[in-house]
Structure formats: structure tokens, C-alpha cells
Image (cartoon, rainbow, N blue to C red; front, side, top):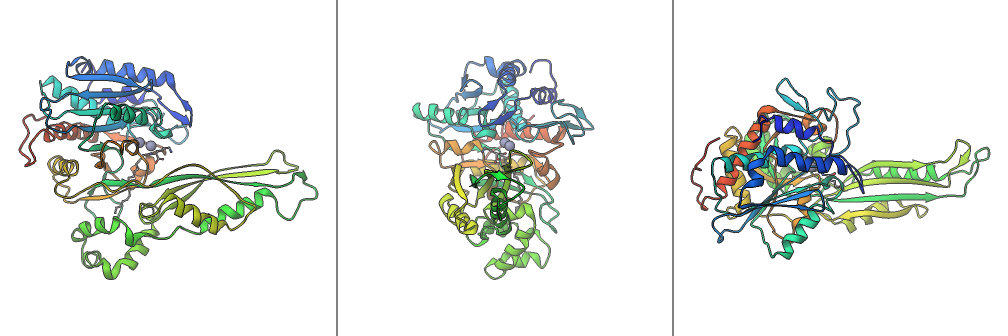
Length: 458
Ligand SMILES: CCCCCCCC/C=C\CCCCCCCC(=O)N[C@@H](CCCCN)C(=O)O
Ligand SMILES: [Zn+2]
Ligand SMILES: [Zn+2]
């Protein structure tokens, strides 16, 4: 692994500002540098004869690791190298310094998602250095534009693999974690493997009115009309879908970890469901698990201090609950706004993804579960759940019906806030454990259905 230490490779990766700024704005210089960087720190990956490397969409990377047993269906590991912007303000350390301090690596991308990019390649590098030859083929797809929808990265990789006739046993991507401290009274951490993800709508509302002199204003301006409309949306939450969702299943699996009487309440959701769903919606994070959320993210209007604004625009980002469709949400939105002076422009929309299997036959789910139990023996509960964000994995539904979103890391509410926020960081120990997890996972995927201990230990 070149001359860098295990964590040195991550700090170097954080240092390269591979920022996706906006729909078509990416940092091509940084992305090209990132490609050179992974070549330099993982030389064995790039020189092994049974590992094929291709650059797709100019900056994404596809690795095909040819297994020795062609009868086994391949799988795929996903991660992305781009990050969201990070202005310096508010950070304890500059976000692209990649500084390692007090046992933590600091910076944008340490949790989302250069940790996974580097851990996957590092685990593979270590296996190859130990002369490990996988039985089951697998792909590693590293997108470069996940934060702006993955149209040039994941979408192109998916099309290429489809053209090659590839069908996958399963996919593992980012998306959920081992959650710690999200539920009051539940001291123990629990692992949630997301088996579906919410949909999303970016909706622009626009109001046009006649411009004029501000000294004699009309009763309502475009700004006032639009502000009232978005305020109605913010004040009117979408319906609580608790009863129809996966969350019920998740909570039932968690029930016996709670003290009395919560354990009884969660084991009897047929009776206490309404009470539980009301408690869940009180917290803004868990609220996202029971409904389509409404986030007012942009508002633009006005041209000069003394001109009645001709146009006002707002963008609202909805995250669509898996029990609803984009169309259903748009209908509800129109009814809430109930003002025909407000125009609706759907900028982008994706429906929620289908639910992947999590039963005993579900290979990908069971391999994750097995590896979680081995690497995190203190975690008693592994349950299926919903990913509240969107991931590149949604571009791969043509290749498999088994998509699992799980990062083998602990996440608490504070670290959740740091994703796309400030002071994103990962502990050195957590990163090393993520490498260990992938190192074991790849070997577990080579064992027969009945899990047997793997050969190599880190
Ligand atoms: C009973 C369970 C309690 C659970 C509490 C929920 C905790 C939530 C945990 C993790 C959620 C992290 C979500 C990480 C996914 C990040 C992926 C991401 O940022 N995607 C972007 C894609 C943007 C694409 C452009 N439109 C996004 O979703 O915005
Ligand atoms: Zn991400
Ligand atoms: Zn992200």
C-alpha cells in the first residue's frame, strides 16, 4: 500500500476537494487528481491481473474482480468520491485539511462517503497482498457525481453492465448505520440495513405579479403570495404513514431491547401504534421515518428595494415516504397550497425504491448480518429499515432486486448532523473497523450458504 499508513490514505483523500457544487458543476481537476491518488496508494489493486479497472463518465471508477468460480453470481460494492460543498465557517478544522487529531480524521467526506471509497479499496488491497483469490466475482463502482444525482457516474456504469448482460446477486451501498442514541431509553446501539429508500421531489413554486412603484403597493405582492403558500406547506405536515411502513417491522425487532413498559408497547403495535407514531413524529429525525418530509430550501425574489417584485420563486425538497408515490404527494401539495396564482414546476422527481428482501434466503442481507455479528459482537439487533436520503444504488435496479444500504460505522445524532453539515469526522478506530468489516465481508461472500469461518484475519 505505497508508503502511507492505514489512515494516511484517508487523510490524503479528504485533502482533494472533489466537490459537486451544483447540477452541472463538478471539480474536474480534483476528480482527476483523486483518480491518480487511488492509483498511487493502492498499487496492488491496479496491477493484479484478475482485477480490471475502467474509468467511466471520465471520473467514475469501475473495478471488476474476477472470481475463480463462475457458477457464483457476482455482487457489487458501491461508494462515491464526490462530496457536498463545505465553507470554512463553523468548522473546528478546515474541511479539506484532512487533519488527523485526537484519534479522529476531520473533514468533508469522512462519513459521506470517502470513508467507504477508501475502506473498500484498502480491504481489497490487503486481501490481494495476502494472495487472496475470491471465488465469487464482484464489482466495485465508485461514482463521482452521487451528490448531484449520479447521471454521469452510476447511471453510466449501470448501463454498461446491463449491456454486458450482468445480473447481480445484490448490491451494498451507503445509507444507514449502527445507530446510537437516536431513541430515548434505548441505550444499546442497533444496526439498520436499509432495504428501501425514500423518493424525492424538487418542486419550484412561482408567483408572477405586475411590477410597479413600491410607493403605492398592491394589497398582495408575488413575495407575499408565495410566502403564504410555502408557509402553509411547512405548517401542514404530510400524512403520518407509520401504519403502512417498514418502521413497524423495525420497531418490533427492537422491542425486547427496551425496558418495561416500552417493550410491551412496541410488541403490541396493533394496540399502541397510534401512540407510538405520535411519539416518533415529535423528534425531527425520527419524524422523517414516518412521513414524506417538506423542506423549504431556496427562496428568490426581488430586483430592487423600491420595485414591486415581478416574480418570486421557492424550491421545496420533499422526501417521499415509501408508502406514497410522487403523484400522490404532488396532489396533496396542490390541495394545501390551494391558490391558482401559484405555478408548480417539478424540477426533478423520483419515486421511492422497491423493498429488497431481508428473509433467510436473502444472500446480501444475511451476509451483512453475519459480518455485523462478527465485527460488532456488542450489537444485538440487526433490522431492516428505510434510508431517508437518496443513494447511487437507485440507478442499479435494472441489475438486481436486492439493494442494501449500510455503512459499518456507529452514528449518533451529532455525527448525523455533521453529514452535509459542519465538523464531519471519523475516528481512526471506526475507519479501521470499516476496513476490517469489508475485508471479512468479501471473504464471507465466498463461503457457501452455511457460513463457515473465513481464512484470513486482519
Ligand atoms: C428506529 C430507527 C431510528 C433511525 C433514525 C434515523 C437516522 C438516520 C440515519 C442515517 C441517515 C443518513 C442518510 C445518509 C444518506 C446520504 C446520501 C446522500 O446524501 N444523498 C443525497 C443525494 C442527492 C442526490 C441529488 N438529488 C441526498 O439524499 O440528498
Ligand atoms: Zn453519500
Ligand atoms: Zn451526501
